[in-house]
Image: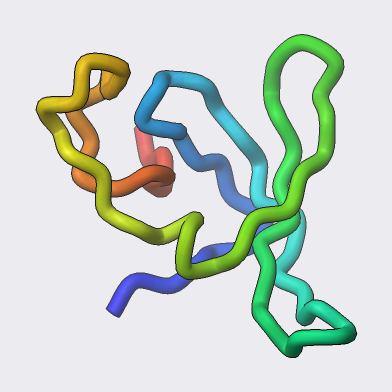
Length: 77
């Protein structure tokens, strides 16, 4: 099973890079959320459910410029 690695760089299937800052728990629902920061533009900070962060995407999608299997993949180059 895939896990989110904190303090690491990830690439989104559309090509942009994001730095995972933490994994946090939603106070009302208990849902686990990924806290991450864009590595471009205004360097905005975002949250997304862990399940969505780790979900598979179709490598053949027109907007999948990386050909990745997952929405976000750990960048290890």
